[in-house]
Length: 273
Image (spheres, rainbow, N blue to C red):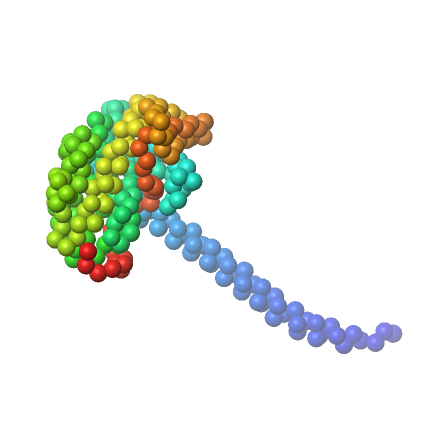
């Protein structure tokens, strides 16, 4: 007769807590995964609502009958020529009875007093501005933050303007012979926004054919064919699942991104300008 195995109860005592710990870890992981999925969906829905609201401020109601968020046109930016961000630019196009009536895209205005300023531009097919809004910035409260529509109507001065109106020399503040007002104690901020808007208009003009292609869809590809000059600038390419194309433009443009958020106030980097 074999002697009883005295180690079996001890081994059972060791395995039982381990099983409990494993079960608790599995349960916690499952709960965290479920919460993450629910939260992720809610955040995505909120971002879509914020984007829709922002687009509504630069593309007037009544000039389109499509879902602005349905089929955005994606333009990839060469990361080497866009050090701030290599993310693709999304262009939201409004249509009415199948014809493009407006478009909007995000533009980064470099040179702000507190850093880059995120803009949203809305244009009609002729390149005339329908509206401009500031999405986020780090400008000095009480001075540079007048670029916000909630703080002043200064941003409305771009409405109805185009690349040729005003003249090239007038795309600056009045203090420097331009058309646009500067702020008391803050000239750097409005100058940065003015330049950012102008650059966005230049981008539209250079890639007009791609942006206004009539039969655009999410699965189609549009090739940009701007006029080239000896001074080639960073290439932009319109991409899709079917093909990719690249074209060079004569006027450099700053980095462009697409995450649209409500106006974000961050601490300024300095005092009065």
